[in-house]
Length: 146
Image 1 (cartoon, rainbow, N blue to C red):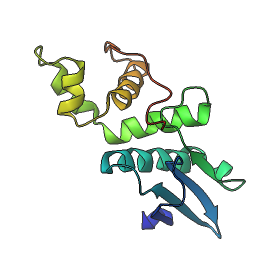
Image 2 (cartoon, rainbow, N blue to C red):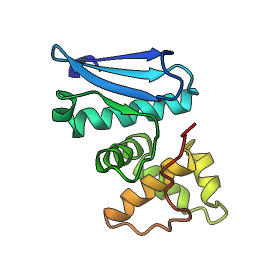
Image 3 (cartoon, rainbow, N blue to C red):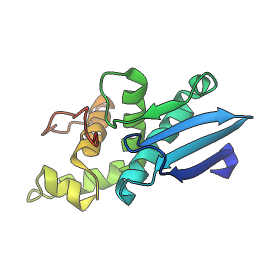
Image 4 (cartoon, one colour):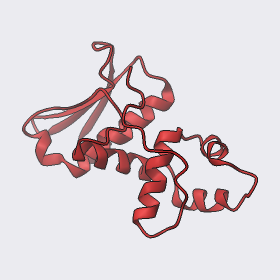
């Protein structure tokens, strides 16, 4: 992320905070909890990148902190979740996989190495863009909240 002047690091300072990003001296910093699994770290990094791209002006005022992923009540968090889902899950891979009639929703998630909650955001994004996909589960706002 050098081209965007972003420094990414890990922190063990906070037990419940999953990640945060802030701007200092025209450099953006993303800190991700070292307590997370590699899969969770990837999701948090994509989520924070969503904040950087979509909410950059807010970073100049205060850090954006995330202790709950997949938050549906805050619009900026919701937008960052959609961004992360679109970044991490390829549209064409879903299209190819749903052709397999033997594959259920959780099989789709497993095949694409995506959490069911992240997949819900992805399918919602595809639906908003005019593609018809069945939403087999409600999007959870408290996913990864510990």
